[in-house]
Length: 330
Image (cartoon, rainbow, N blue to C red):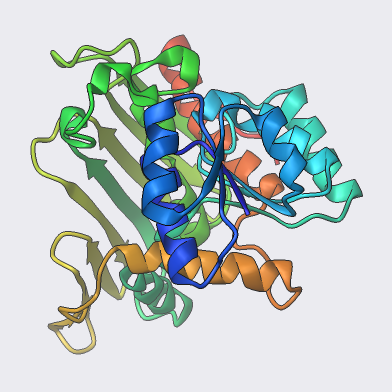
């Protein structure tokens, strides 16, 4: 298996692949120190260029390079018949090249999975179960938020040099926090209309937006509020759902889901086991990917679905840029 991009998320996948018993690991990165690190830590055979790596004939490629490089790498891999795991977002633009990638994958009947690890979080799965059972009645609104101080994400490196800080590499909090857009669609379906505001509002030294807020109108009538930022000095991630028969709150940091039902007049709380570790999401995601490659499951988010998530995120940026609401195509 070939991992293209041996930064933080690439190393995580290499570590988890090794834990799942994958013996033959290949890595591509232009930086020698990254190649040396994954070679020493995981026994991966490394290459400075993608062209050199093709000689090893991988059948599965993990695309973990900066967002702006995803499609170029993925198209080349697809043309060589490789199944694809692409980190989120699938790209930084929804353009003809992304359409070409989708066509290549479809025509060659390849498996594609775009990183959506929060779908494997047991708290969010519990929330989806509550909604699926209709316990909250008619859902009228949802409020999702995520924030973390960007310089704290990778304290071992200069945040100003990372892709998050650079528009040319597809950075910015809206695309970085695309997980929130993805799980809201997963919970409530397609979005009809978006109004968004985004900007560089803090002292953080980046050339992308560091804060964004949006109002979403889902096609089922639910209203959504979304806030994401690079500024909060403590990690925060949660989702609150309001229905006419109850309320449910998922809190990542508190490791719990709380549900209030009008018929009982009481809150119930389900906490994650103390032994649960966030890396389990990524391991479960890999197990799911391998089951898809084996034909046993269907991808949680393939390229076509990821394009719809990307269109939603880009609509927030368009709305902010034009000071107008944006309607998404059916």
